[in-house]
Image (cartoon, rainbow, N blue to C red; front, side, top):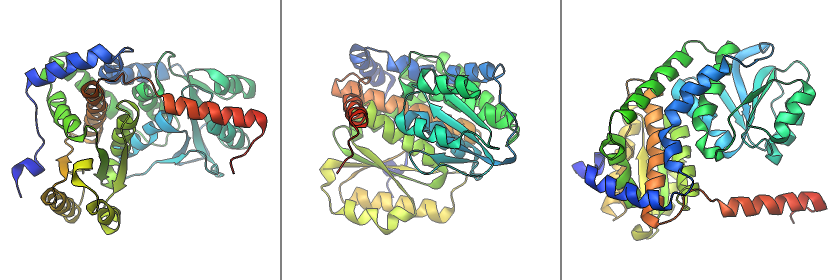
Length: 368
């Protein structure tokens, strides 16, 4: 198996510097700065959480539930990556709400996501402990009206740029609810180490930036499929979402080994020039059989002419590894936006669809 198919490709500092300059010309709302500040947001969130009220401890502390969609829910999946093999967070987005006595985090950055507000009404009350995680909006108003604790994230960000706050506040709440212990210290350490590495090195010389540019170049103007193991679910979903929103480009995820039994057949029949495949696994925890299967699949598609790339990660534990994957996802998508010459901030399609849905709700219409 060729080395260039299994080892991350690295761009030179000069190449990264050139592309960062292109990005800065179109990045009108400084999304790059938000990505750079992610570890600082985690540290600020941990400190801010000390002043929030967690309510009564849940009667069942075996795990928690999180209600949210999009950027307001990704923290739950990333925390599951960090806390694996334990799956301590169950996610709900527009589905039937949980009915047990575990604690529930209702998360909406704007505080106005319709599906989340609907579920907030259904999970609040009885013997269930609930906390609202938001910046403002209707969810904050409901929290005050219903005497539900509201843990506030600062306003003024795109929801996808508040992942650091969501991570730290959610994990802080889990420790206050005594669902887990000792994890917040590990997240604090991981964020501190990433912050120091970013501040002590010019971004164009940082190893994660050098790894991000070749991935951005390889997926440019292609349909991207991210093959991932269970231990990388949150990181894979974050990468796909950032490619969708920041780079305005189609991307989706496929979990292995299930994908090896179905999705690969459909992809193999597509045009190699139109697709890019990313392979994301956990070298420390995935079974040798699973990793071997992914490598063989990667080589198979490379031989067919597809652009295939491994997705690197760095760190001494799952907290550091996950944060490195998170920052790499953000930077890859932003560099891709720069390569395409587009502003990463606007999400016009999402905004338009939300407006159509809200208008339908006001008029009492239902989709046929």
